[in-house]
Length: 240
Ligand code: NAP
Image 1 (cartoon, rainbow, N blue to C red):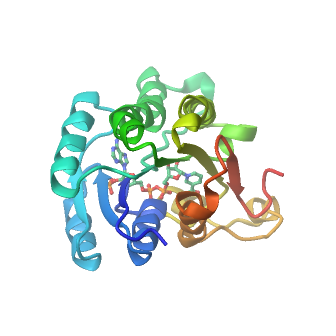
Image 2: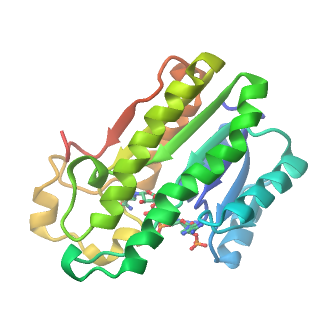
């Protein structure tokens, strides 16, 4: 389905990003993934997914992103699919949230996506094709107490998605967002599966990372060629 397409996935070592790397690889893509610091996990993944390669890079650092995209171009060739998945939370009620926790979450979750898109943009323009998939969140659609930073970053990502989609639509490039609800990953492991939390989800369960990856695979595929600027909720009905 993605035979020989070159895919760059940020935050590719754990959770949703890891599932996206595995799904894309299984479908024939050549996968370059970015991660923050866990080199052991990255090495394991390179071994698990032959031909893939991990690059340690903080997406919030514009110069580092530029350098890593140049490296990926040398190692793989021109990027065809970009998945902005790297993200983090630093939750606190707005009243007591520290300035650095607000800005760090914006810098990684939102500005990080801008940095990678800026690097892939000229490649997509030149090739007159490309796929951008940004992993937002239902928090960006409906808000969440304790997550003013995270919700703002994820809502911002939706605005960014739609603007990029409009800029590149006539050049054969699509840009879409996925808004997951709760997904079984390290990010949510401390939330537990308390009854009130589960009862808020119409499907009464968290998503598996593979269920988000399936949506990413669809948006990356030829079948989704006429879909751009869309926000696809994969949330068991949480935010409908
Ligand atoms: P996760 O399990 O915590 O994994 C995060 C991944 O991002 C790791 O690979 C991590 O690398 C990488 N990362 C973190 N900061 C980075 C940085 N500054 N630069 C580059 N890579 C960085 O997260 P997840 O739950 O899979 O979430 C993935 C995405 O889905 C995030 O954008 C998140 O906001 C979104 N999302 C998650 C949920 C959920 O319920 N889990 C729901 C909605 C949306 P290391 O391993 O090296 O640290």
